[in-house]
Image (cartoon, rainbow, N blue to C red; front, top):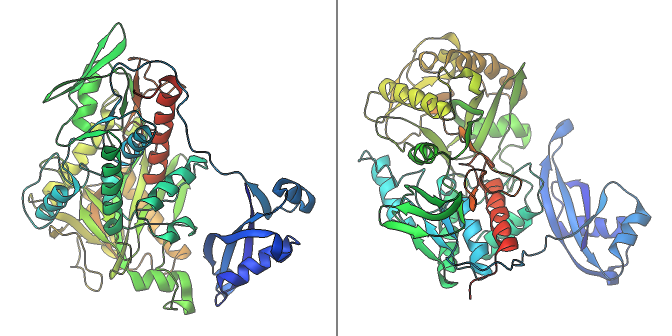
Length: 530
């Protein structure tokens, strides 16, 4: 248990020790009573034209922290109860090792927690281990062939391994602390624990993923790469095995952490009667600016100040039931070729830890609901995504080049000029087109209306020479695999749909938390293996 003192606004030149001293004095504490003090969170505030650091300081003291908080009765001083480490409490005997399908954030954290508690999980991952995956991604990015099972969507670490490694979330779950602890233990930078908007970066995150997988193996778990899930076997409504190309894997409990792009797996599971629903998601484009433009728009005269992080933004707008928002913003990053099926173009964004690239990029997405689909049924969203990705492939020239358009030309609805100051970073090449003709009409209209509005909030955002690259279609899963309050599927007892692919998370942190929840459910019910 500790005390958090938040909202401490200091000058930009202030040191961490200055903020800690302020927190101790605000609580009326003698320094001798403070056992430890450190930065809990740090952010920057530029409101009213002046740059400040805003601290939250964590204090551990000799004495009763709860009584102190009650006595002070201040909204900026609160008690923090630390998330306890999960422990196995179940008593049912497992005949077979639990299985985890997918080694993205949800599957990775689920398997790690199970391994730590003695369950020796069997992990099935359709893609390759990280070193092979890196080679496959580099080959495709450089103009080579697409591997449908090992790419930016599939392989060790899942889609999250090739991203900015953002750890922000709005779920407010205490398990977030468990996620950060393990990331730090496996190589995440110390600042991951204190930044208000922490990120790791693809370059560091890949090594963390490998370290976590090796720990699973050291603790008795087994990871089978290049092993896609082909379905399940059940008897009297209970799970008995998972089907793979190498044969059945016997299990009485399994976690489906298959990721948001496992379309063939969705189809196989649906054909077997697993309950599913179509769910909302979003589609749009990647927007690129020079990072210096974003920094100037956000920081004004402070842009370029040493120590100030590369500017990042979140912009949103809602009209009726339709929303338009920025997503997965990558300061100093690149747009990446994220296709996982042949004949389709998909984009995403990526940053390394330093975020030192010339351009900034973000998804600029418009919400889609099942009412927008021409087809009906749980997999209608998959068909909708595929239709858009095929259109982007054709508009790009049919060789995995991406369709590109400058913002000014998009707003004027004309193919227009070649990019100039802002050069597209998509690695497979690009082709000038009118993205208005590729996007769904409602999405194109919403983007045209929203970009100038966002330009008023963030100067330079709607600049004529900003670049749009299409299409961004994998913002989240278009499917929800139904589960009960126990987390188990109502269709197959013992099967736990989990993470972003199952429709219960969005991003690294929330997916990891959902993986921990799945592991906890197994630990509550079953005893560890002997």
